[in-house]
Each structure stands twice: as C-alpha cells, then as structure tokens.
Image 1 (cartoon, one colour):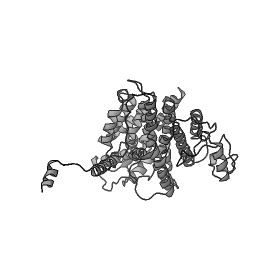
Image 2: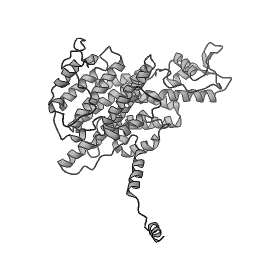
Image 3: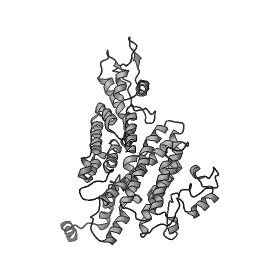
Image 4: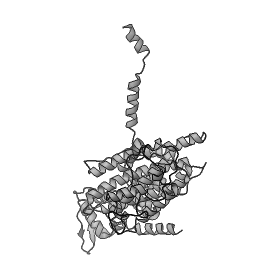
Length: 447
C-alpha cells in the first residue's frame, strides 16, 4: 500500500511505453514530411554529414512524401506496381553507407552492365542497336536503377560523374517528344533511368547548386507525365496507364521534396533561386483537394517554411488564389485565372482538378436555375472553357440531359434531379485556354 502511494506521488514513465507512443505519434504524421534546412554551422565534416542526410530521396521519408500527392490507394494493384513501391522504399537506402566518392564511368551505362544486359536480352526498345534485342552501344544504353546497392560490390567505374549524369539526363529529356513510341513506353524508360541518376548523385553526395537544375528537369518530366498519362488513361490500356499514373505521382512527390531541400541547403541570405517560385507553387497546386487528407493543415505549415520572397512572387500568389477559389467553389474565377496566368507546368499539375470544378459549376447551375429558363450550352461552354460538343457529353456524364429550344439553340434544362458526379477516368476533356498557355511556354523557352 505504501509503495502504491509512492508511485502515485512520484509517477515515472515507462521508457518502453514512451517510445512506443512516440513512434505511433510519428507514424500518424507520415505523409509528405517537409524537412526544414539544418543550421548552417560547423566545419567541412559537419557540412558533409549534413549533405549525406539531407536529400529525402530514400527510405521512410520518401514514403511519407509520396503519399500526399498520390493519395490513398484502394484495391489490389498489379505486381509490377508493388515491385515499384518496394523499390521506392529501397531507392538509395544504402547511400548513407558511402563516403564522398567521385565516379569514373565515362558512359551513360557502365560497360559491365551493358555486356550483362546484352547476354540477358534486357535492353529497352530505345537501347537496341538497329533494333537488335541483344546488341546495344554506349550511345544508346542507359544505366538501370538498382534496387539494392552494397558497399562491398560498388566500384567507381560503375558510378557516373556529374558531367556524365548531366548529359545522360539531357539525352533522356530529349526522348520525351522525339520518338514515335507510345508515351507510356517512353515514360516507363525515363522513369527508371532518372531514378538511377538520382541514385548516382546521392552516392557521390552531390547536393550543391549544380544539381538543382537537374532536379528541376526531373520535376518537369514527372509533372508533364502527370498530364500526359491522364490523357492516355481513357484508352484500351487504361488500367495499366492508371497504375503508371499513380506511381508517377509518388515519384513526383519524392523529387519535389528533394528539390525543396536542395533550395534550402544552397540558399543565400534573403534570396531565392531563379525557378524556385514556380516549383514551390506546384506543391500547393497538387494539394488542392482535402477530401482524403487534411492538406489544409499541412499547407499552412508549408507556407510558414517558404521564404518570404517566394511567398510574394507572382507564381505563389497565383497558386494561393487558385487554392482559395477551389476551396470556396468560385468556379468562374478558377477557370479564368488558370487561362490568364498559369504556366504550362502549373496547368499540368491542376488538370485533374478542372473536371471536378466543372462538375461543381454544372451542379450549381442546375440547382440554381429557373425551370422555365434553360441554360444555353454556348454560355456554359464559355464558362467551363470547353467545346460545345464536349459540354453536352460532360452534362450527360453528370446524369443531365440537354435539349434544343424553339430557336434551335442547344440548352441545358435546369432543376433536373438526376445529377451525379462523373466517375474518375470516364473521359478526358480539353481546356480552351490551353493553346495560350502552350504559346506562353514556347515564348519562355525561346527567351
């Protein structure tokens, strides 16, 4: 009895229970963990240690990051997707074991790997010399991503130095629009080879300003793939492409997180990197929807960590207004602002949300209109920034019927009770402001 009273008066926490509660608390906040920059103090040894651990392109941190953009997955997926997810967890997991090294491989693919893959007939269609499945060349073969790497077996001749990695990435980006192969085939090849580039960068601890531009290019690839794979997902191979789209979003989250860390690590006082505002804004545009995850809280934390010059930039101002219009249901401003101000990358990030806002607009018009005054399809076309034929198809996908009035104009009768939100992936529709956005992109590239 006395012992029990002493325990009540002087309670002591059980270390094991404390650690378990801490771990459970840690696991409940896993999604998209943005790591702030460490204190920029200490000598070269501390700086090297900071660089070793700063990129979150591997392990649990990348798994946490990928979930915010990818969302929660439902149902069973193909075995290839599961293998890819396993690879994500192991992507560069052993990179912390390496000391600072400089690779010596002069080619896009190590000679030993080329010979082995020729013997195994493991050559992608872009790597085959004259179409021969058992023959390649240093100008075509690109090093594959390795799921696990052991310090016992790695050799400097198997690691590509920075200059070779840069030229390899340029070669891969050149394949995006220069090949007749289906985009999903191109994407699958670049998807794997860019992971290998990130792995070689991590093994050599290259995290200075030189690598920022490379990560921006890889973000471009994943964001544009975010758009192109979605457009392709309505075809006969929709299930396989949908799987690729999901995996692409996971990798996009990882590369964005690493890019933001690189920005912070290489930041000069009271300054921002040239392209940082646009790439920071992509995070906001990818996290508009708060239905499955409480992104609002995480976005508020994200905004607190963004440097003031970036917050005040026109790119971030655009992203914040789009977020506000989306959350408040202001569909008119949502569409007009995208058409007038979005860059091509920002549009690609926003595209999955456009049909959701269109459905909201149709719902409001259907419920708020007068039954004796149908809504003209031509007006709805301008509002939703769609072709009139697509507006009819979209209204039908929402469970609503269109008709023709006495003057021969197509109209949408309002107060129809059968409205329903279109199913995801039912069809892809165009955006009438996309041409201006693409022209703006071309003008920027020519500057």
